[in-house]
Length: 338
Image 1 (cartoon, one colour):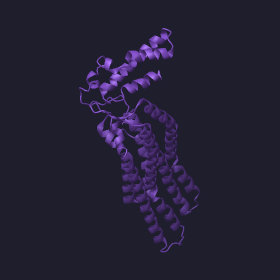
Image 2: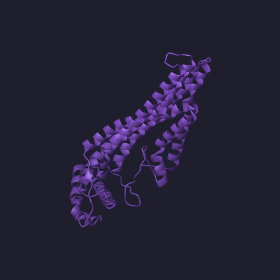
Image 3: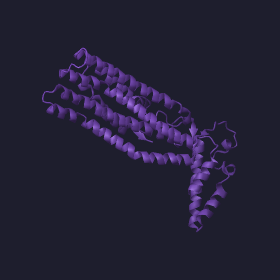
Image 4: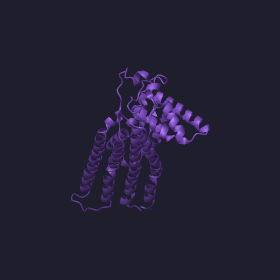
């Protein structure tokens, strides 16, 4: 049966990836499979059955009218054919997308934990340690410097990863042949367990992030440093959780992009769904698609604005588990799996 599918893909290789062509290919595949099943039922050998099917349906010029693409096959319709992306291109894209995903995720991680130096250094200052010039003011100044270093490094990584990924935008205008599509599907199946484990571990970290703070507060014995260290650990755990969410989501988004090149479903304007989120979910509502596409950058901006305006770093971290829960609810209620 794979021989028939491969032969069919080669038949349609140079035709445009339009709804009419995709419908015709599905119809022809069904006809070929039905004929193959009939021949096998008659007692024909597999190779013989494949040969008969190809001889009967293997000439696209002869059956183009029957499946409704005669004008396209005869080039009577001016339709632009898509370039076929090679397997090497796809492998390179997936390899680079993995690197960019980790870069973007680490950038978000640095932005989330940017206030950790201030929290830790303020705890040291409250302990009465004056090893830095200027005493408490020296600790505060160093904390602010490290905060802006983390923000600058994090934003820089996010921008770098985004710009590096844009060079592959032209791949979205390509199509994939059968063999390449099967490779992408197999790689995505291999990645499913990693993605699931990342999501589970991230959720667990979000739920448990307040536990270390509570434990350290109980055992601090009036030690300001140990007490404030709990708040820092909360941010680190939330940062690690978001790192897992972003890295796994971005990598899965790469598979979604590639599989979208061969999708057989189109929107009402005969185009493949756009603005697909990184978690392999499509939202029919245009406004909701826009909101979900900028969800985590917006949450990061709100967190930073709220934290800098109030300086309640021990409270503002709550935005991360709350928005993660809200994201999951919206995804489950309104998202469609691709």
